[in-house]
Image (tube, rainbow, N blue to C red; front, top):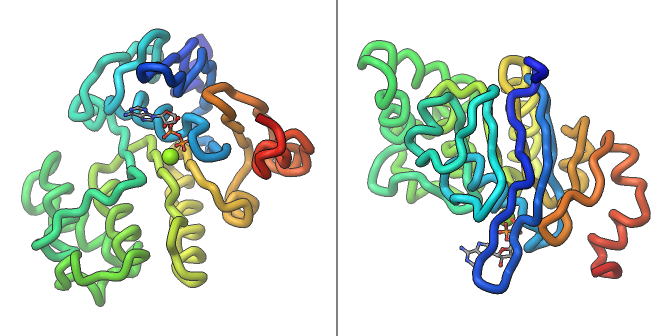
Length: 239
Ligand SMILES: Nc1ncnc2c1ncn2[C@@H]1O[C@H](COP(=O)(O)OP(=O)(O)O)[C@@H](O)[C@H]1O
Ligand SMILES: [Mg+2]
């Protein structure tokens, strides 16, 4: 096996009653890639993420991380492998401040002193210093997205999964998200699921397009975005 391949899905299949959410997906990811997953609603993108993060057990097929099968691992065990996921649904703890949320995540795997250092670094990097003591439920949607990213980074992951990180962000917040994603990619591998084509154009290199639970095309961003089949799929012309 090629050492630089850090994630490999082999014939990954997920069925929910009558729905085939993933249909024998094969996908390989190289170390330090920034891979974008795109595709219309219901294509299977989030289900793929959930399989990789241990939040969904596949019906059949395998997920291999750094050469080891992780199929069936629970989310806790996956997190301990150094994989961090920001899901589509926010998972911040209301009632706690921004700083407390990030601190709890850092403390899970670090002694107190080191956790404190990690938190102040993350608050700096994400430009969250002014919001540190605010309760997360009082924040705007975009600010909460950034806090969630902080919670993911607090676990010091080598693989970061972001499900629709730009959804609902303002223009300025999108710019910040783009620069943070690029900065994370200096030291970590990323998979980003995103709907917004402008966002994809700004960050993407290799893009995998999902459609109806299958990989439709996997190419560099320019090839993918100029492909008429991809455009049809997005506009709903091709079922
Ligand atoms: N827990 C679930 N139970 C039943 N069907 C599901 C569940 N999760 C996803 N699905 C279905 O699987 C398909 C793929 O969903 P999803 O992976 O969320 O797509 P995407 O993230 O690309 O929009 C959809 O048809 C969706 O309705
Ligand atoms: Mg989704």
